[in-house]
Image (cartoon, rainbow, N blue to C red):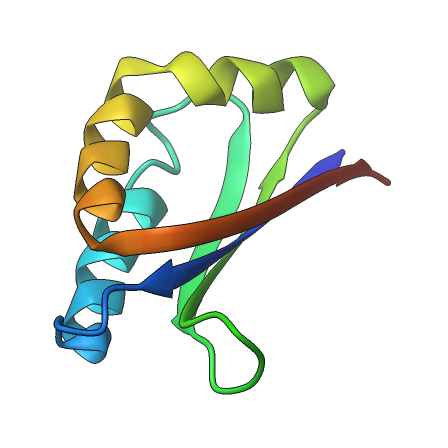
Length: 94
């Protein structure tokens, strides 16, 4: 199993709660659409330098890599990029 964690810094001029809700709807909605994406959870961060966080799981490394170029994920990335001004990510196997 692979765990995929992403942190985003959002634009200062946006409604961050609304932005996180829109990002969450898109990314969490990919479960069942993107093969081998087991879970996805997006939440508003309240500590640290980031405003939002994604915690997701995949069956394996190949599935996590395939997710990056899946057409449905690429569409949701457009929404994320409309809000994000900074990003950090980490994947690891368990």
